[in-house]
Image (cartoon, rainbow, N blue to C red; front, side, top):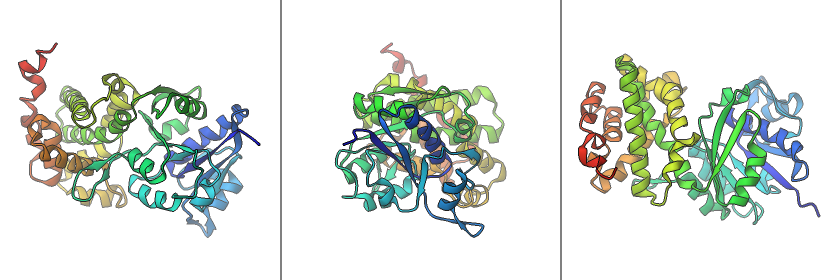
Length: 358
């Protein structure tokens, strides 16, 4: 009986197809460890009268979500998620966070008991009544398998173009981390494995709040010095949030690609910054701009800010997170963007006693 591991990529958007491309090449490179065929679940769509799965399997290109990039021939598009995942030893989850619960519901009892997973999904899941749940926790609870996470300064088009970058895997165990590194790492996509799943995942969500603040700064024309200050204070609030709500998180994790690098990338590019800049300049609401600029897709930053604010308010510590709080209130229209800087002039980081421990 073969001991080789089979990989399934659950998702086939821009990022999912990019990761499938990498994994497809790597399972061949490490043929002693992995089955050569990689299944990729594709939400079936019709493209010019043809099924997207048929197009991918015949042309080896995801013409809708990753055009002009060839996928390895051993990556097979499958329209049924249960069929794609049932024989897999490793499940790679790369879908929008709002769909993960429905997908996991379909997979309950249909996957290998000894399988393990890797989530590339950024964002928190809202909890009924308020608050947040980590996506990795939700998957683990639903499917009863260990889940690691991958986050980093990884804009999908650049990774697909094989431009050099780094990423971080927060591993559920060192053994699983090593296996996942083998199917993910390439000469242009370098992986660091850390034993800090929760902090790695939080970075991928919280940085979107800070990116909104960076966009407000750009819209107001305040310049690079102000933007740098917002990024730094945002990083400090990310670290403080982790300390309070997920004790045991390691400070060093925030200086990996998932932390400061992804924060910088998101604050200079990406949709949260772009839409937030337009929010200031156009005077339109976030909802209006989502329709105009994102084809109705929801922006993650404002939603995450709302979920985080619920947690801060429940503990009476909004004043300890003035940047997160100000960004949330600006997104709601309770505060003018111009007032954000006033909210952070006397940030706890600027107070003498905050440095006493140093």
